[in-house]
Image 1 (cartoon, helix red, strand yellow):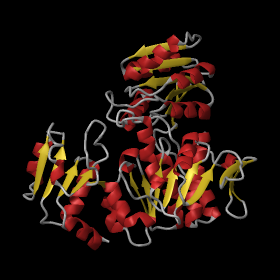
Image 2 (cartoon, one colour; image 1 turned 45 degrees about the horizontal axis):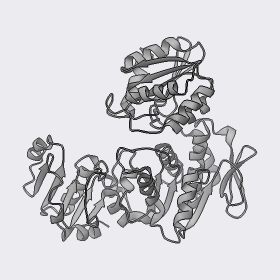
Image 3 (cartoon, one colour; image 1 turned 90 degrees about the vertical axis):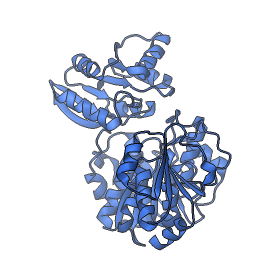
Image 4 (cartoon, one colour; image 1 turned 60 degrees about the vertical axis):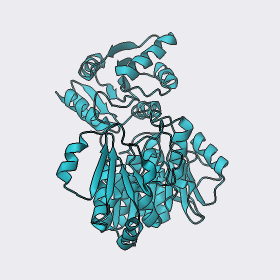
Length: 455
């Protein structure tokens, strides 16, 4: 496979567009395979001028700063990083564009289980990987969860099972799809990156768009938007729909608290009451997606069942922090959209205080405010720009009966939440907004929350 990659790169004039985690991984692979090739790296970050010096690669030049997108027409192949948005860039010919993801798909697609969706990607990907690890040692987990796949290329042979978490940014402009594709859900997200919500959905749907007849598409049959895309595209492949309810067209479903998988004779995989580590209906849907992928691969039911029961949830996803001063704290910092916050409150049931807000990307919040108003939540802490807009929506609806606190500092938000929450009830961080501005990512926000709670 390395020989084929070398031949692919060798005759091209290549630009690496964006020099973050994936861009640097792509550079390392190309330089390893083609040590004498001239390369150009383009990025808006002017700090890379220092990196160019330390890199000490005389056959590599940098285009940095505000004009980094000039002269794209000069290159045969432009390998775009996920963080580069083309939303406001006019490019007539996108045929030269590819990505780390598409290059990897080009050579390994038959071995890939690709997982995407607005929410649940990391949990589902990690769960599938965990199940497969009980079945075979020859599997890897890569992608949006943290490891660019080219970093693992020496660990891959023709039998390696590759679990690949895929963001919309990684999927946009891909023209190849993995052998097993999973689409968990479609909600409003990343509207600052795309020209429209439909463009975001289109990027997500690329996970299956270019599949072949013998491939498998596992999808959430309860998601209306996914159903609309399937009807619109009318594609030929093996459809594997899963649902919280029974239906004649469902392959995986719940009936009388049992989780069934049904191709041919229906099989009971597990009783849902046993799956206590992953709370909430949203996680039950994630489990069903993992069951479908595992069954297609051929994992025995007993291994699937025991692996799901022993799987430990990831940090920052309805994560139990502990009991302090008789208050139960949960960290759901991964929640960056309203649907995730609603799912967390439903899963925990006895939430007394919820901390909402963060970076405002223009997401629709009315349904979240309506849900919280009708819920048992007594206290709402609004924070930052998104929190201010949520409060404006709350006031515009002339709602009352909740205890409201609004602040621009995270420390004050947590301190006030600790004071507001009743004994033996839950204080939940589930912001329904991105962390940017205050924090570099959701993980830093969640870690800060846990530190403040424990202090």
